[in-house]
Length: 179
Image (cartoon, rainbow, N blue to C red):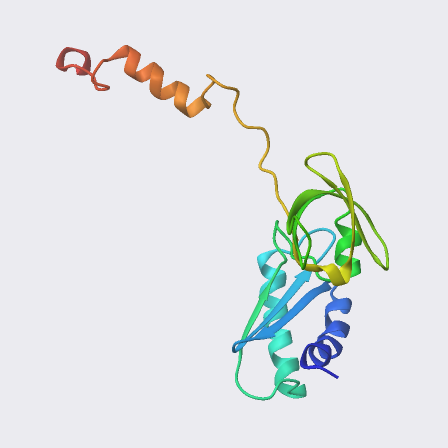
């Protein structure tokens, strides 16, 4: 059993009792990163509680020899995709991945399907690509911040600045206006 599997086995029961999901375990270079999630989202209080409890559990079980820094976090807006479960949960979202081989190694598009063998992706060019999990080096979801402002239209903050400058060429009030 690998170190990551020992960590999973030790902490999953506690996480499940708190309605938290173990999203991923990363271990290397003196760092043990545990990513947790929940359908309703994870707040700072849940992360703090999980950090204290997981630290105590790992001290008792000692699944990893040597020293390491423990980091408890959420997967974030741009989530790493490593397992078939991760990919299945991301169906319908925009992803970017790096393939191990092929003409085009960096592929972006919408994840349209994920099964036990691999994924189907509709690229930004509209092509459908099928990749086996073994052919994917790295993948993550892509968070889109919303529509860009229309050309020639500024944000409300920009409009306020323009309005102020139009009232006073220097941007400040004259001595007579201050009285």
